[in-house]
Image (cartoon, rainbow, N blue to C red):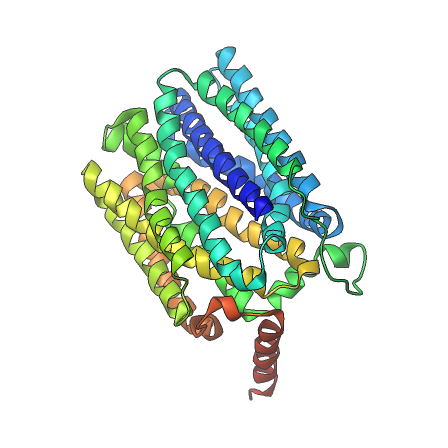
Length: 417
């Protein structure tokens, strides 16, 4: 378990640093531009390299030692923090240099995501994997509680202090991953095509598996519409008027709810009616988004965001467990890359969507419309993805079960009149 503890530590500290840095970047860009659309662009910038590089990175994760890719990704993120530090020290008063650095940040995330996601199943026995997902998610969410709050507090000393701290942490995480002894190469062998067909094999695998496709699609659309994190600087500064420290608390609130639920799931995993509970919690996510959007009370806003995060944690737990256990290890890097595209698309494009709709309709209307859109997605997904809805215990999913469900669905379509 030594290697799993190291992995868990890197997840915790790197996430904490990334969240602290996000608070600093968002506050700086909004202070420079006073524009909701500028915050939307800040969310879009990392997505561009992620969309371009995730599939090749997934292929690398299935070919190379995943530890090496994770070390390289942390080194790139160290460089990103150093560049933000340089821009701040030089007193740059334009947003576009920050956007360029955010492009590099997206490239680092793209390189590390498939390797990190596909490495976890190699560190724990399959019977303990669902609990490992819960503890890993709880560590991540706890870090996102501390990270934004810490970022807001350190920002009072100046954004340069935030970036310098993040740079040191990311460099330390690269060293920690290098100390992991477990072989990070994919286990198992299969006869697979080369070239472009190998690159898109993850897409083909997800497309043929209703459990994977349903979970990824539901998460993508729900978070794309319901995500309001890009607009938190506006709420903190102009609506709730709580300053950068309040912004840090607002960003931490969803993680507080998620971390609490994650710890509960680590001790008491969901073993029945998991699919239905996931759909219910995605609906709760949308409802909490609406409440946050119309709230003018800082306390109520914190509670709504905490409920939002708690609901999202159940969805993350079910989807992450299914995504890894329904995929053979020699495919996990490429399937994780596809999952990363869905997640990053929902997060980064969701931030861009929030910025655009806020510019069109106003900040409050954008958040409320997004929350209502999430409720519509849940209602439609309930009927489109019955296999996902009827999953009982996600920890018992196997590649064979997932493939059998996919084959049954294809036979049903071909035999339909």
